[in-house]
Length: 60
Image 1 (cartoon, rainbow, N blue to C red):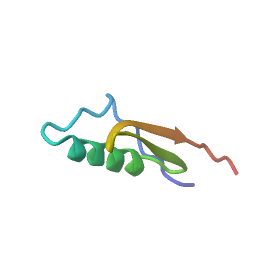
Image 2: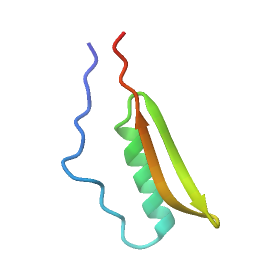
Image 3: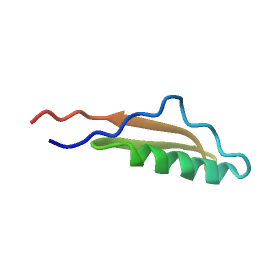
């Protein structure tokens, strides 16, 4: 049986400073806690404005 990673108690907080660094930090966190799924970035005018995570649960 695989071990599962616990979800954080609260949503990730933005990193102060550079918005690009904050987006990269959020992406790294999302990928780090995801076992199966999709991480999608929404970009407007060359800037990341939204991060979407779709998680899949596999039972076989």
